[in-house]
Image (cartoon, rainbow, N blue to C red; front, side, top):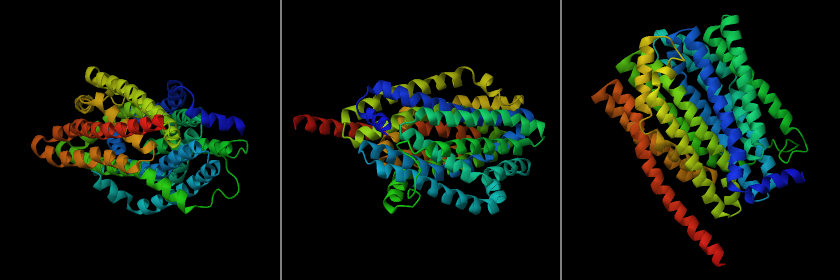
Length: 456
């Protein structure tokens, strides 16, 4: 117990650079691995089933975003709360948060499946599907919905693993899932001739195996945060605080769900089924870069949360600036790849020449302002990490709803399919300007607080 206590309190004393390296690298590896196994599904489906299957898979993105929204409502909020409580040395509450994560994820996971499953086919048509693509999307989503509770628990417990001082173990769980999924994909898709349904089965099985490992880890009584009698009783204060903090990523994912619906509908109307498939490929590629930035954010989260709880504002400032610098380097690399080699990276998913051409054009447009999007993502996550849910919500919604939504409703009327694509970089640059304004104001407050503490 003493070892784990020291491990947690090191967040307030050790070098920020070393801490970010220790926490972010495992998270980056885990997030990159997670994006890679999503890519593996797409590659096997695109090369083995066909271009219409790729378009069908793209139809599932809004539902996947919506499921992720409910998962992040619990997981992200609870992990932030764990970090803050560890910073305050309130270990009993931190353990109760762990138990509440399990109960809330089961409730939300079951509820989501029960509500969505009967309406699945009309939902997929509403998302921009056609007779040629909905059949593939339904085969995939049926399996994913059956395993929805497992997915929620897996991601929720992984978030708590990171926040409680075990970023390496969180990485192990994700990498384990990726490796198992990659091995099972060809077996179920080709070996058992199950097509796109086989990819979904492989995903759920892989997450189930990792979830069992997570439960075994948190059942160890020698861990600082572990399961024991009483922690599974829902506590109103914990539930409220977790959901309040998790409201920002929840709303961001819900907004993303509606945005993807509008993108799919716009592309279907102005470009047909292949345009949706092109967006599906671009989304997977962009997702890799964004997941690396999310890994940096996850590394920053416990450091910023702990030091904010301990009122060490100078350390909060340092970890923020270092994370912004690293994220900007990552997104600038993504910009260079998308501009210089779009056809090469797109052709990994399909051999269809028309689909390659359309996806490459879309990729070039989407990454135009990518160098600034890392800053916007880190800033939004920073406010969430220190418990300022309201500001994080504003930043999340500014990009998705206040800017991107009007662009998607207006630009396609003038520019057709290209208007849909150009809506995305337009929202990136404008949302980054809003983030800059809010962050400068917050940093000035930290400076005043730091000066006052030194004067005392």
